[in-house]
Image 1 (tube, rainbow, N blue to C red):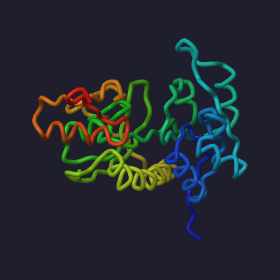
Image 2: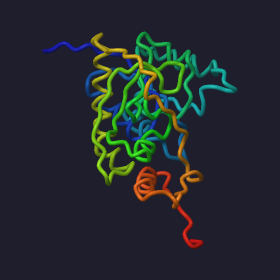
Image 3: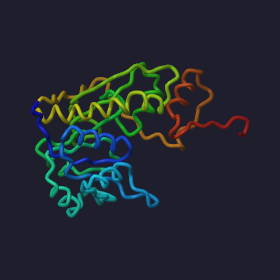
Amino acid sequence: AYYQNKLKLALIGQSLFGQEVYTNLRKQGHKVVGVFTVPDKDGKADPLAVAAEKDGTPVFKFPRWRVKGKPIPEVVETYKAVGAELNVLPFCSQFIPMNVIDHPTHGSIIYHPSLLPKHRGASAINWTLIEGDKKAGFSIFWADDGLDTGPILLQKECAVEPSDTVDTLYNRFLFPEGIKSMVEAVQLIADGKAPRIPQPEEGASYEGIQKKSNAKVNVAQPAEVIHNWIRGHDKVPGAWAVLDGQ
């Protein structure tokens, strides 16, 4: 049989995407030694936690990793004890301290739904559409101490259809291809073949988080700008406008 190198992984993150990445990495024979996810919400566990608990994988639900910008020693010690050789962050909303990011032999890799260095920040898919980009995609990069600034391991791109929304783009490409590529990235690392391509400064952009409060449509703009604004907020957070007092 073909001999494949395998790694001991810590999965840090949440959501259905995190669950799929976790399941597929295990299918490939990697050992997930710990899952670090968010606490249950309204008595419901995150999908990643549900899958991991079913498999008997150790699951940790820390509300936070840092207090006042300083890592919480007990949390860091608990993390270190699982003995991961690589941290995989499919989708993570928490701030992970650098002494956790840099702890494993191979460091940490992160999935980001844009073609970095463009659209750094937490609302990358929204801004891809708001700005009318003709192509979208995702990057898997090595974590460093900046925000979405680390060297690129791999990138995949796709065309943006005129009718695309955040949901269609995610479901058609960013989600399914992202899962496959996270598995591919881990295997490249296991085989010692993973590149580290520094992000160029040119073309870098950072945008803030799009929330309901700042998703208001400026109706005085050209139709295409409004079209992009609306589809860039569909379904989350949802664009809105006040027309004739409605």
